[in-house]
Length: 385
Image (cartoon, rainbow, N blue to C red; front, side, top):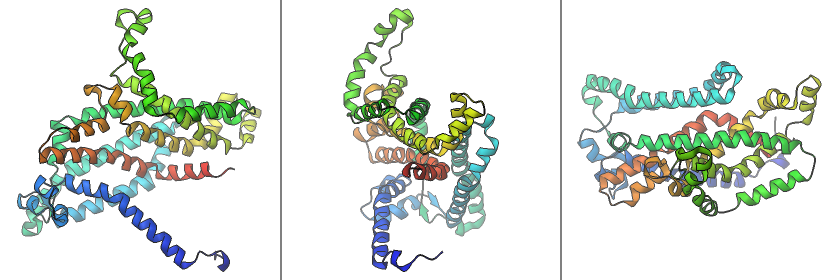
């Protein structure tokens, strides 16, 4: 359908806005691209003054560590079809095969499966297959672009970075689970409440959300340190000390995140007509049954969008996790800060860069898998129905 000429955007404005978006995307993507390139080069290439040496890695290629033209072509093709599968086919499989109709559990399992499949494909299957192919191609299979995964192997295997990943997974899973469970119930109740009390509760929650994180940590810290003495009358001599444990971080991050979760989910619930609740009640459902079987299936895009923001808060947190967790239970972000803060060689610095790149992979995977739900959820929350 053609747009009336009076409503069409002027050409100069479209060109200016497009140029601004392109420049902004390049500026935003450059740090991620550059540290990714550095992480797959030997230290001499990674910290070379010439940017082309960093990109192409001549010293890395000279050491026999690199990608051939067939490696690059096959890798790009596999990556394209993998992304296309995650965007187009994976949502249909989740809806069809989710156990007992639990879409959230299906999405969680699919995201983990997609991550494992991606790691196995690019870390084990493709390298072994392409080594045989490059050997058969002779000179055409020689490396032309510097590439080495040795820094990632050092980080994840030698330095046991997987322990930090597991700790991050525990913290983020706990924060997202508690935040969404409480947030959906509270958001639904406040959205359907007709009194002014709901408004003032939300205002108080917003004020609490605006407090600096250091204030909340300072308030919780004495409680966690003395938790064994506090809990000893209840649990006896086996009372645990919460300081240094992921449970303490989960409690603090949920306290920080819960007001935002309630606010966001309340706005989504308000966009769902109350007539759906009334129709379910007429059909014999209780309030909770109407919420579970009628409202929640409509709310999944909003829940997934809110869950993603909760995940990002817990996943990227530095202050709370660095203050409340000991070295054994440290999550990935404070662990990477420890990499950069200590005195290291250039090899150790490249390993720190590889660790920094590693934490971005789950974020890209989540956005790629849930992009349709995120877009529909943000659209639903942006317009009052």
